[in-house]
Structure formats: C-alpha cells, structure tokens
Length: 170
Figure 1 (tube, helix red, strand yellow):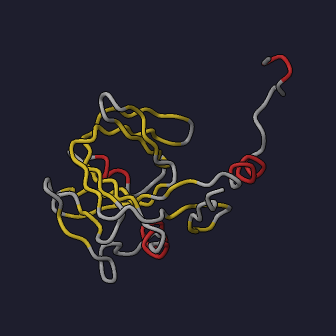
Figure 2: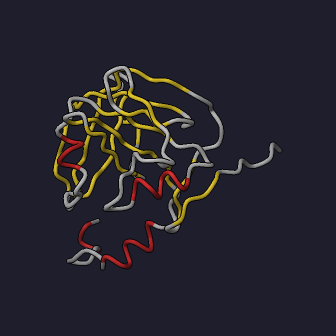
Figure 3: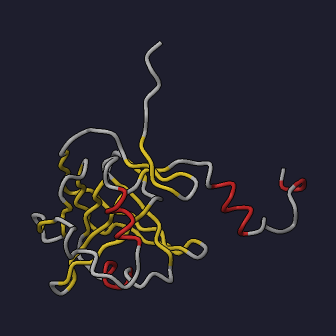
C-alpha cells in the first residue's frame, strides 16, 4: 500500500483544510502550579482506555502555557457546554489572564481549577507523555469525575466553535 503513496507528506495548508471538515469536542485543560492557575483550550481530547480509565490530548510543543501546566502534579479536563464558545476562545488567546473575570472557577479537590457551568470535569494524574511531530501527547489517568449537566457539547469545526444538533428520530 505504501508503494502508491507519494514520497513526501502533503502541504500543511492542504492538511489543515482536510482536517477542518472533522468536528471535534472542545475542552479546557487546567492546573495549578506554585499557586498560579494555568489553562489552555484543546480540541484534540479523546478517551483512550476504560481499564485503566485514561484520556488524552495534544499540546503544541511551542505552547507558552504547557511548561507550567506540565509541571503540575495533576490537571483537570473541563468539558465545555455548547454555550461556552467565548470561554474556549479566551483560553486559546495569548497574553491575557485567562482566569480573570468573566471566567468563573473554583479550586478542585486537589487544587486544579474547575471551570463553572461546564458539562463535566475530569481530574487526572499524569500517566504518559510522548513527543509526536510538533506536538506533545499527554495521557492522564482519571482519578475523579463530575458531571454537571449532560447538555449539548461545544464543537470545533472549520475553524469555528459551534453546537451539536441531533438528527430527529426516524
């Protein structure tokens, strides 16, 4: 099969355009390091395993937030609800205090910031990390979970945040 593939990877722009047609869920990963809350938006979140309970996300190796977040002894995955596009955008911006108003949060049971009004929180312990291309794969062991409301999720599609609409039952 690989004999029919080109001898090089596709261009970054073409790859980005192809991936844009795939919708993904949106989370904000938060932690506290030396008493300072840190967090970032991720659209690469996924479940990995039920036994043990593992989740993962990718972070750009050039992220200025990752060094502080990665140094924490645990992190929280805040699964965003459909009405939280502004919160997702806020945690994707650079050079702002992401935890200042209007962000609403509280410290979780181990200290990681838990964002208010999200669909669910997962408290994770670092499990595995691996460099993959220009990103870092981060795998967490889920130590605790809390479901706030099982409403519609926030999605990321074609460079924009949006809402999920279920097909009507046939």
